[in-house]
Amino acid sequence: MSAGLLALGVYVGLAQRDSVIALALSPSGLLVATATVVVLGTGWIWVVISSHKLLRPISMSYTGRLTGALVVGLLCFGIAVPTTVTAQTVMAQRDLIGSVFKSQGSSRSATRPTVNAKDPWAHIPRLNILLLGGDNGNGRTGTRTDTVMVASIDTKTGNTALMSLSRNWMRMPFPANSPLHAKYPDGFWDPSLGNVEQPQYYLDAMYDTVPKKYPGLLGQTDNEGADVVKLAASAAFGLDIEYYMQVSLQGFQKIIDALGGLTVNINYRVPIGGEYGTGPGANKAKLPSGYLQPGPNQKLNGHDALWFARGRYGLSDPSRQERQRCTIHALVNSADPATLVTKYQQIAAAGKEMLRTDIPQELLSALVQLGLKVKKANVTNIDLNSAKNFPSGKNPNYSGMREIIRNALSAHPATTTPATRKPATHKTTPKPTTTTTPGTAQNLNDACAYHPTTGN
Image (cartoon, rainbow, N blue to C red; front, side, top):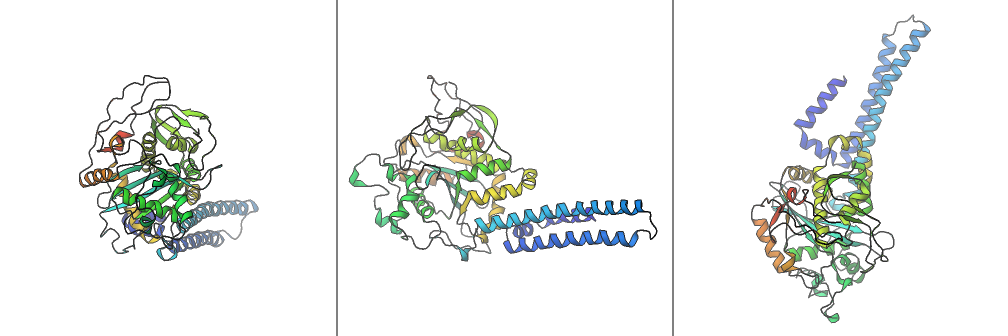
């Protein structure tokens, strides 16, 4: 019977994959699946006990009856344990789906499109998703979106281009038809203060500042800060951004631990902690508590993976953006089926704490299918030419970036070989240099390879 059920499960998983995915992403379907698992497990136990009662000899010694009872008990225990674990795992999945992904009718967004349930990608050749890393740690006021990226996914091939926005960009524009454009016609900054650094008008301050200053301006939404950043990124990059996914740093650390760690290449010393003591809501100035040392295929726990992605003390924002893209690349490539099965309840619990999004439940099945394509496709980074378009954050050339993005997305992504880096000539933490031609796309297998700088 066990072999038959296993064979049936394998067949269903292979031949009816779309149906299985749809079931795994439906809260009502998962509830039915849980009840089915419990009923089957209970029924199986009943069959074992009933069979024993029917088949055991009438005249048995005390030892024989005891032995039979122990065998039946062990069989029932062997059925009850996997049944309970399976039911708990299915309920954990249902809890995750219901907590993170709301249905289109029960959630509110000022910026997302309406889902075409029959063919979600019919009019979306590229799906653009805003990726936000929210930092609301101890000692900080409000949430700072220190990590802001856009993932542009070809819905036919799964080929994905990543573009990073710098946390210190000023004058972030808004679409002309947005009510925010009327409030900030020259972008997110204050012209009366002059052409100087305005930390209160950096990109990483928008999420918290704009909703507090103009609450309800965009209409009904469950996350006005995310909608503000989504609109600004859309205008800056010339893209229609459909959805956002927001990751809390604390949740990120837990999910990496639940996955059993993350393997990355570290090409230069990366600081753990450290504060400059400047900027809105910043902590007091302090030195890093330590450094992640260079090395290939470094297995990092959640704490160290978090600092690999966000460490910046003594380094540039472009270097941090590169590591953040490599972190995403490592996550895409690290889905180990055995780990997902054995630790799914921990992963689901961490996912509930980590994720916030306006992606509706109705899109999940199609999105998972697209994700399977992404895992096998090319993932590239589009270099926005910082030397030309944003040598500082005071006045970025957004039109220049839009042109680069338009050209890169209309062409086939180019795979490049990383150039040899020049040795550092100083004893401080070396700052990585760009290894691609500005304005081109670089395959992340190359960008995230081990090609270390030297220095102490």
